[in-house]
Structure formats: structure tokens, C-alpha cells
Length: 117
Image (cartoon, rainbow, N blue to C red; front, side, top):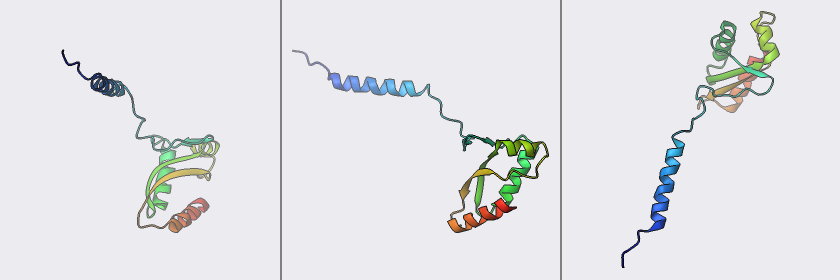
């Protein structure tokens, strides 16, 4: 009598092959989009000179706390800022890769100073 190959092993190998093959067609999310803006907020556009100016000013003020990754601002305020009708947006959010040597209290204090000026 002939031995029948193990069906479970063949099915397992076939399943693994099909899984890997199907994953080849999948796409990952864009890595340059580190922050998804909340409703009512707009991500700053690095090609817009006004947005770049605001981003750089915020980056300078938070330099000691870490690396600024992304910034979004209230859509209405950002549009007024872009049109030159306001100095800077005051309602904004940012993502910061914190400096490991900086305490949470120092980051909070920097946020208070940044939001005032």
C-alpha cells in the first residue's frame, strides 16, 4: 500500500504561499503623512511660502523640546493667514518627536509660551 502525503502539510504550505502572494499586492500608507488632520484643521503645505514660514517659526520655538514632525492649523485661521489677514494661526496642533532629555513639564511650558506669542 502506498503512503499518501500528509494533506495537512500540503494545505498549510499552500495557504502560506497564497497569503504571501496576496500580500504582495497590498499598499502601505504614505509615510510622509505622519499626522492626519482632525476635522476643521488643515495640514500645512510645505510648498506654500506662508505655511513654510509658520512651520519654521514654530520649529525654532520648540527646537529644544524635540523635532517637529507635522503641523496643522484651524482651516479658517490658516486661510486668513495665507491671505495676509492675520499674523499667525493661534489654533493649531503639532506632532513632536520629543527630545529624551526634556521633561513633560518643559514641553508643557514651551507650549504655553508658543501659544502666547
